[in-house]
Length: 123
Image (cartoon, rainbow, N blue to C red; front, side, top):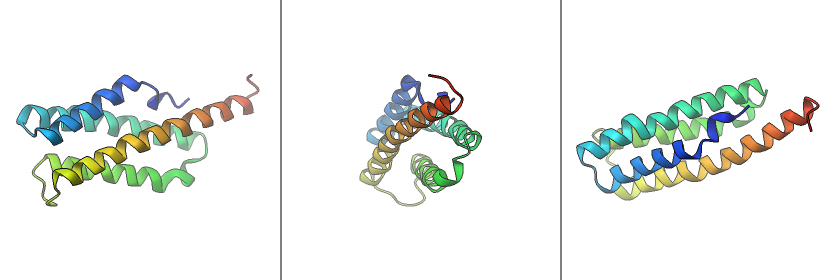
């Protein structure tokens, strides 16, 4: 359970692609950030949301997950034309938030995985 967040390579790759596109928004970097980086994160967190639901704790984390989804959407808009008029600094802040919250969510997932194992009578 909660395997969605534990492949660090997926997330390292995704955050690297997003950061590269913010620093150097050429077509190749933007494509990698939006079609690979942000999509990896979006899919993994959609799965994590389902895992939280299966564990019966989704409601207490819904606001945090919705905020995370909002940041993904903001960065996606920034990288695809920037209709909101964000600066590069704004985008870096959103990216940093995603990275930091990812760490927090992995800690939550570990704690919940242990709790679920203990409830199911596993050592």
